[in-house]
Amino acid sequence: ANVDLSNIHVIGASGGGYATLYNFMNSRHSIQSFSAWVPISDIEAWYYQSAGRKNKYAAHILAATSQGDSVLNVEEARKRSPMYMDTPVRRRSKSTLNIYTGIHDGYEGSVPISQSINFYNKVIKDYGASKKQLISAQEIIDLLSMRTYAEMPADFVGDRQVIFRRSYKNISLTIFEGNHEMLTDVALEKRAQYDEN
Image (cartoon, rainbow, N blue to C red; front, top):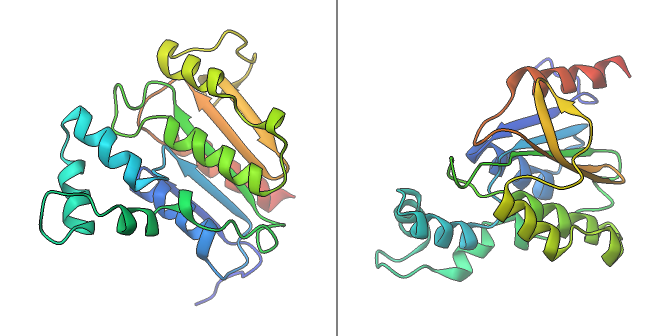
């Protein structure tokens, strides 16, 4: 195919966000940017989150990982989870990873924001971040329980208020006023910025 191999971008939302994180961890290709919206990073955790919410995804996870019984195969779930994969720090040294999640997801959507926050913490720790640079347990509790943040930045993503934003090296996390969605215009605009640089 007529592909510019120096200008590859991976964008996805929800299951596509999961595929984006999976590609970040596993693709052998040199990829300029990854944009994961409301992604799933930990299938084991998502099984329990889905079972607790009594949604259809718990059964889907069992069907994909178990031997036909009703017991989660934890080993299989973890094997398929970006959260438990080795971060390819050297291979991704020239790539950016932008993670976006709506603050109300998990309440008004199927993927709690902890899936994005925990993956961000995992990756930046693998990149060498100190404990102080990680999103703290108290910050996570506050975001999950209050669905807002006391020190919101005066910033927007598209027309949505940014609730919380962190970055470390080439990795960023943006939590915005929204639920289980991708702001398509923002995702494409962000990709276009790489063409200009």
